[in-house]
Length: 87
Image (cartoon, rainbow, N blue to C red; front, side, top):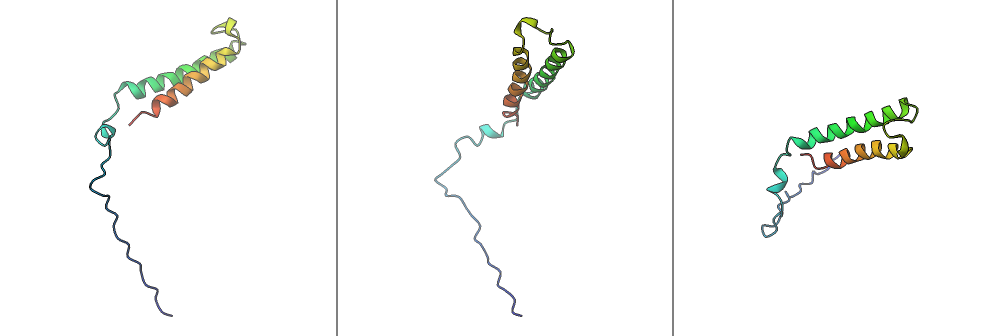
């Protein structure tokens, strides 16, 4: 049986007149506060929800009723937003 030929592709070289706009800015590492604040918000949000459920929906703020869930989940979603900036 004859052997099939191997295709040789050319190596792509981008045009020299087009440069990435933010190449230098994207290579900088994130500050230390980015992962630290994200971890804090995750832990705080989980703790808020655990306290809310274990207290029989009386604490942390009884007047907020089900808005306590929004606070807990909002903290965790905010941490995801912060973590999307982490490099």
